[in-house]
Length: 405
View 1 (cartoon, rainbow, N blue to C red):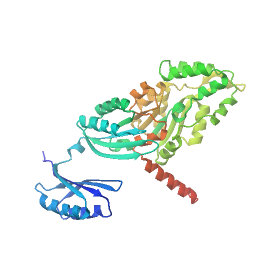
View 2: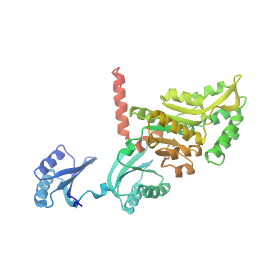
View 3: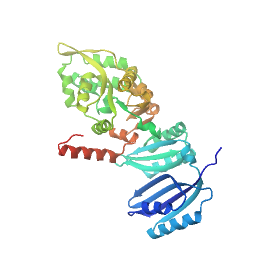
View 4: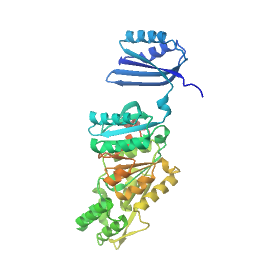
């Protein structure tokens, strides 16, 4: 078994200025060293530059330190050189720990860092993905058991008032290619059937059945049929008027627009009605949609739905069908929902996200988002707010020039 290679970690800190990186590596080039890793962060003009180097078994530390120290002194910076062995932490696997908060307090970061340390893992890097509409900080962590750390941080998140996601690092997250969302109270702020019930004069009865179904207290298929029966006799034109009343969730357009730019397929699956999902598909240029269809006779709702029922098992079935149509594995899918009827598809997806969800759904999902901004899902996929804004600006410039991307 070969011996671990000897490594040097050179850390330079101080006020940032042009040429620091170039001068450091020019100095290091005079020695028999190989670059293994480089990380550089600038926060409000303060630079932290770390370089991990492989070196001979007996490096001339005195010469290296003298040269780097002279450079640091010339630049008015501080330097630290640490001798080590191998890259043990990186060899044990990496995780992304993503934290969403509004606001995000120091106590949250302290608790998360403490849990990571208590698990025996190491924080390799911390960076900000967004500062609006929520603050999102991501930790790159090595040496942790993903299931144990996820369970620990899930317990912490309840008391901290922050959302915490733990995902495998590397290419796993980048492999996600299909995002499928629930509609009512997820893509939309409203429950479409509640709006219809208000027009039919049975709002209280329908609302009570909806709440019970979302909590998992009533079988969803039964609750759906009971609610639709209460709509019997309502003029069918009212359904067409819904599009003027229903409100998209804040961030919905940004989420879909950004995902489509990046080559994701996007779909919706709803226990609601095709009369609504058809409008959303056209409005947002969605790739896939499935929902129930309200039966209409003589211009009025009959109180029945037609076709294959989209209930809790039906949502999972459609997730699998969309994945097959997109040519992606189920592990490359993301499912987003808020109610008990979303549980099966959330469990089946590669990443299940509970969005402003009931407790039973939060506990079953891989992670949760508790802020009313649907585009926060982008951050769980490693897409930063800067990336979104840069793409928006580029598209605006292209549109102004009369060109298309």
